[in-house]
Image: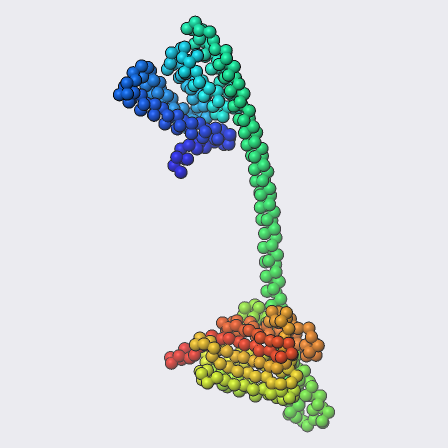
Length: 451
Ligand code: ADP
């Protein structure tokens, strides 16, 4: 990590950054090599080598100094200047550390290949040719200065080497450039898509806000309308019941029959308006529960008393039973619990032609209590079971078409159950019957009387 930080040189031009990093790597390699040479030269006399050691020593230290200098120039000034200096050092240093004959024709000659090869990767691909030219001129000058024949074969070799290093360097530069173009195009596309997404997100957010506002308006509208309908309907029902009871004078048999139908229809209408109002309040989040102590036995007795008349009209048996371990008193919203049971029992009677409807209360565990309504009626097809708890959804069968309803009952039951911290489940088989189970948290009054 730290090494990589030192090798990297920040630059706006990626080619420049790549070349400067490469130069740093070469410098590190060269530095280590020079240190090894210094070490070898230091132990040379012990092994019996003496000749030329001083020159090699000096050359190595000069190289080490050059490495540090080039590193500093590369890091803090310019990659091109640093590379040029480094290549010049590599070109001239071998000429200074050996005898002219060895340089022109002998053991040191190969060292001039290094700057030729490196020039193509450290500067531009064509720089190899310049390096080859420079090396050839230098070698010719050295040869002439000591009356030697210039080494033409070596000169040709250096130019051939320059050609061989130029080609891959050029291919690599082109490939990198192509890759950068592809990268730029990709970046642009990503940016365009991101902008498109941001625009789509903004319009989605606006549509969402509008939907929320519409939903709020719908709930408010429903609540106002339901209120306006409920008050006059209650008055109609009250007066009709008084008329039916003969409070305003005796009625003929025909009039009593008509009044009974008025009362029944007004009650149905009122039930519907009440459901609409409840649904609107639940959706608006304004429906609150009134917790109080109540007796579950009384609750089931009331249900039995209210609904058995309806069950008898269809020759159905309505039975209620409560398990002995259910506490005598519980805490909850009795009125809403009654509403839940009335809805479930009403449906059970509505969709059962023969058999029985059974209501039970029991404890499945120490933290919950259950209210269960089972019938032996038509049952609910499996594909309809997930949606019958959604508002205004009904199963489209001849039985449901026969019974009037708007599909709000179960939706309200489910939402009330959820509000109470409970959950509702359904088991049903077509032709065999249905069982709705409401599971609620068990809230037993404490001795101090907390709810
Ligand atoms: P509604 O009774 O007004 O249609 P509900 O929400 O109470 O609305 O019921 C939705 C639908 O679920 C009913 O239309 C009926 O198809 C089905 N359903 C509910 N309870 C029963 C039941 N006990 N047996 C058979 N089908 C039922």
